Length: 441
Image (cartoon, rainbow, N blue to C red; front, side, top):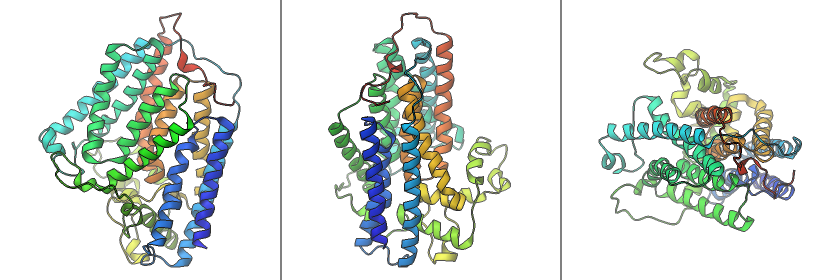
């Protein structure tokens, strides 16, 4: 039955992706990039693990069947929410008031310089560039979360300058700024084998290029690029211990080991263990972990050293609160640093309320996609942010997305609003504000 349920999940995802593309003719429909990640985590990975006999030492058959029912219902709710919201019509195509490309560029430059400065501080703190990247999965560091997270500001900076180019045309200064703000994260992704930054860079560059020009790449090119990107991400994870500055270690192109390895850090194994553990202990957070990301995380530890414990979520210090009770209920411990994936994380937070939560999440992606195509403007950048963070949403936890979403989205919103209020060019042509002709509205 486990196998049947797994293939049922595959059918639901395939139908959702197909329907999303057929009704929109948009290769940037949210299910086009979310579907393959859901397929990887809830279909390909469990099938590979089962065929290798890697699940037998961790779970009983009835436990696996129960988990796949939970995953099936979750995928159905997410797909329904996404398709329902993306199918809604908001009215005729509209335009924002004219915007100042100069304000967008200046705002992007300021954000980017702040992010670049934070990145340089983290590099200097560990002894310089060579020390930062001369060992596997390393990089820069700073004790302050504001400095560490501040490096992310280079991403919204990149999106704002892309928007300025779409309004004002390509200028040498814009290209210099784009390269300056992309390079640090490209180096970090390449020399530390981090799949998250690699995915974000690819999505922001590619989607920003096309969406800001009201264009879409051909379906065949999109599928091919997606397959190459998927292989690259698996390649980075597989060779993580061998990729660093000056490494002479041999790299392998066999990326299947990371999928079917019987390891407590495997996303499907760890996520399944988390669901079973929380269910057997009847221990759920009921939104406390998510609220902590909004209310507690921004407060520096220097001011409130025991902030998570005092808020009642001290578990956040261990695998974002998802690693509790494994030994007690399952007889084994989840690997440190592991993540359970979207559905398991929501289950541990909300129990069966994970189903409406997934409908809301899917609807959010679908709704913002519609806004990006019907309204355009700032919604294009906001949608690209959601798309770039989708790898954290599906493969890790909501905690990995909530704070990043705010950090990337709020500056974009504020600077776009300022750019609309300070528009100085009556004849500015805002091609980014028009819906792509290939999208059925």
